[in-house]
Length: 329
Image 1 (cartoon, rainbow, N blue to C red):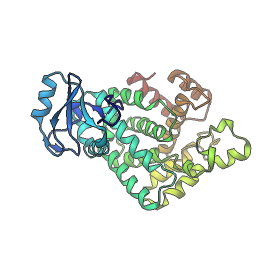
Image 2 (cartoon, rainbow, N blue to C red):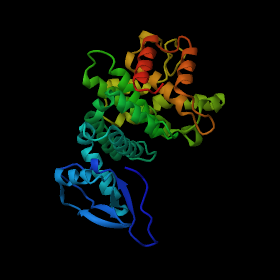
Image 3 (cartoon, helix red, strand yellow):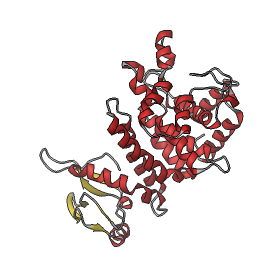
Image 4 (cartoon, one colour):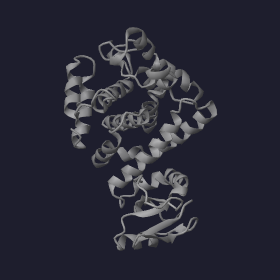
């Protein structure tokens, strides 16, 4: 979904554009679909009417690549996308770019809500349940290099925690998929950990929530380094697998024992939080921050290689392979 809207005089109805591919046949939407003809909006399918394959095919035959929805119906459309996202991302007839855009839009909204600083327990539990369902329904979507390339294009921009979490999760899933025989249960648990890995930062005070650790003094850095433990505490109210909690707690550990909070070394730690730690470090480097520009993929990988002993060489090779196949490096 794009954020562009049809220009309208003050007080008039406004609209936003969506792809006709993303209106799933056989479903009912809480929104009406319009076509734009000679500068005027023409009703094509009213709210609540079943959208059929004939509807969609007729639009595609006419060369229509965008339809319009009233701005007042945005919440209904976004809920519709969330409900049908699993079907959308599996539909090979929909261009990969549009599936990736739909996935990113829906996922960002859900993660932003879940990471809200003031979310009470019951809302956190409900919102995480929705994210867990999203992961289970769409994780296989990331295994295709073309998909990964499009997702990377959407997710790389910006410094928001929810976008960083999604980007790390996508990379983490793609690298874990290179390990033969990894059970789906473990993949799901690790990707939930990737999404939640920085949730502890939402409980830090003031600027520490978004601070670059390079800019902190020793006292501030000590507090900032509590965020993995704080994250596990926050997530104690959720029903999480042990692997998910380990990903949250150990995502800043390093192979040479220089990480935190435990200072564990290499094989002392499970392999999956170490994969997450590598993906997290890479995304931090390419994303940059408000005062620190992001690096190119090549420069970020060089920086990681320079930290000799900090990251497992086989895991780094797998990350490079994933990025290369997706033409992201």
